[in-house]
Image (cartoon, rainbow, N blue to C red):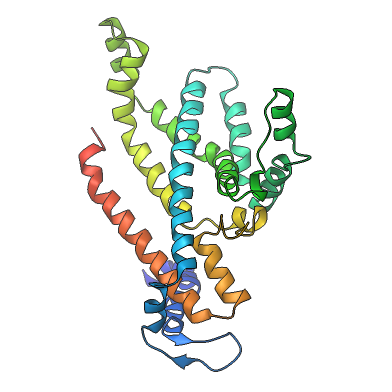
Length: 281
């Protein structure tokens, strides 16, 4: 049995578990990646309590999730419902909408950075044609984080769509037809039958999206670099800066473990609460 598990277990141990234990050990030291590590115990964790930049990064991460999750779920659900009614070309449309998901984040972020360019971007030019003055987007403290949210939601819509579309196609047609015959309209059929039966897919999407949201980095790094003035700096971006810009590897490791615990707690709470709203019947 162990022989057959080895191809998966060995990389898991070497590239996941060992680095995790190593980062935990580093978090208890003061280190700059070059010199000798100096034991400081829990001082790095205590320092995070008074680190305003770390708290700001955590707040920005929460705000990112608060904007990203509803946008990507509602958009993905809308696409899934629309495609579920399509009988011809469904696979083609599904492939087109899923294409951004498998596209490199660097490519997507650069594309959106160009689209949202305050002076030359297509978005602001279209707004100008309608008599609307476009915002500064990723160059503005107020709009930098919404810019990242918009790009992130656009990229991940296809993933949410595919999951929810699979859930929609699993809804029994005879139940929907019986409700229609009994006089239930389209909205009532969706509210009372389709959506409750879609809750397992919704639960999966919410859990995965939250975990990914807490780990957001690529699009922030490429589009804004955490700026301007830290307005879009998220936790993983802060970990990166502490490690490679400031040489505070112990602080960065401590912050990464705090993030791990936050994600773990949020996931456990979701799993416990699913019994109240997820229906597997």
